[in-house]
Length: 200
Image (tube, rainbow, N blue to C red; front, side):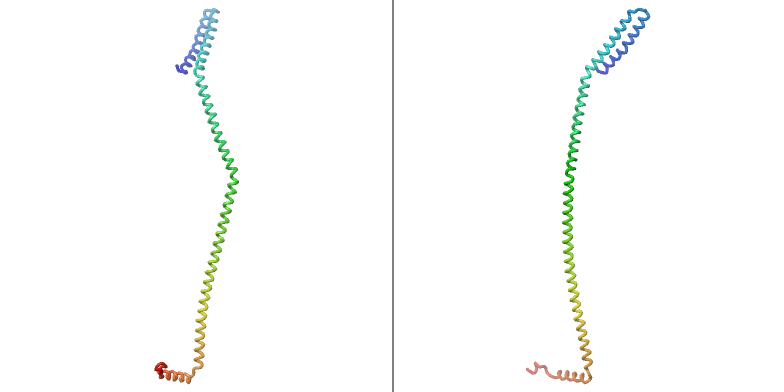
């Protein structure tokens, strides 16, 4: 029989028993006898015993399973709470460990960044020095080329001046008599055979 059906039967009997006791009390009051009081007390105790017995039976039948399931649930909840607590403690320990290592990690990162900055500064200085040397060499070559060009231009200018000066001097000394003498000398030189021909 199912537990709910047992409970329903016991409750039904518990409800019907007082009704029967009330009917019996009414019958006793009509007949006017005191002898019927005792049976109503008996019915009350019988009703109580029946109700107590039914409840006791239901409790005895269902209580162990209920309390076993409840105990198992409580044990499971305690185990789950222990796992959650252990997990939380592990996380807290991990956080504590990370916090303890945080300063050393920051120091390491700071050292690495300073080393990188120093290396980058050194590289930039070396690059700047190389650029300065290259620019200096280029400037010297350009200055040397400009000096050569200026010297060549100066030589040309000097040669032009010398030619102009010589021409002026020649023109200043050239008179018609000098010109005639030069022409005669030139013609005379044309009339002579070459020196190599005389030897032959």
